[in-house]
Length: 327
Image (cartoon, rainbow, N blue to C red; front, side, top):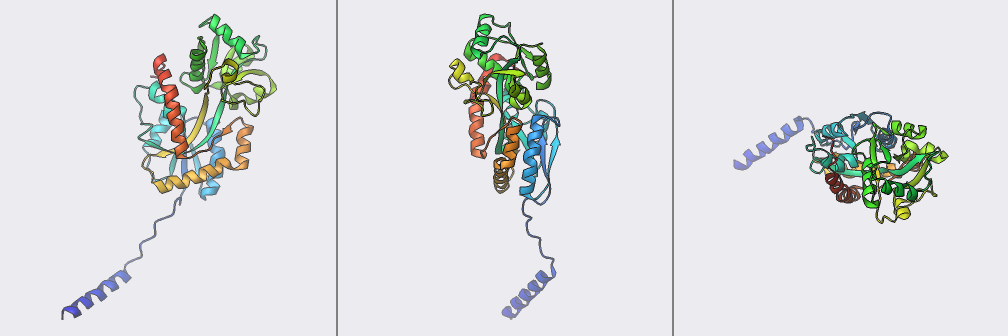
């Protein structure tokens, strides 16, 4: 009797299972558009890079990659939004040295934690930085310029796109290591500073290559030195700061990568890392990057983390020692 009862129960269970609708299989990632947060206004270098890489990434993912600009607060607005987004792989963000390194020292409080709230996906590109003067400026070498800076501390104006920018911090590091002091003239962006440099209203500036490539290539603005470790392929005759001034290990640039909310699943991040890396390595993407003055920068989460460690070791003590703040 017991066997008969069990048999009936088994048959009843099988019948109920057959009557229930089949559970859908877990959807493969991605099955909808991916939102890419850019914490700067549309039309700038960061926005241009995201749209260039995003278009290629969209093809590889098989889904639209939608660029969403959320500027403000030295990238804090976009970073906070991304940090609080669902960690499902459908929100990613362009993150730079400001977002992940400088801001921790430039602000007493942040609306996000660069370590706890984000996980690196991969690197994209860096913006070479130059010490540049106007076409008619008397200084023709970085050595001559720095001799004047050292001889007249605090009297030589040097423009940058703003307080706390990679350009500003590179200028401060150069002054400290070379033994001098500039009079910092911060602007609201590279474009107005560059206009004043060309007009002769400011004698020098720290200029990123994407902002000034056309003028640097034609000589309308003179590049006295590049802050990269080696000469730029596009301007091979321009010396490095390291070589010209003997500042071993001196290197400064603006860089950008992609991050996702920290709790984004490993498998999703691995997929994004793989496809992002393929997009950055794409010959068409690389050619366009170089055309607009960017250096492609490859590397996944491990390389990204190593870069962050080096950057934090270099820049955070400088910011704190000089008491530079954006609060």
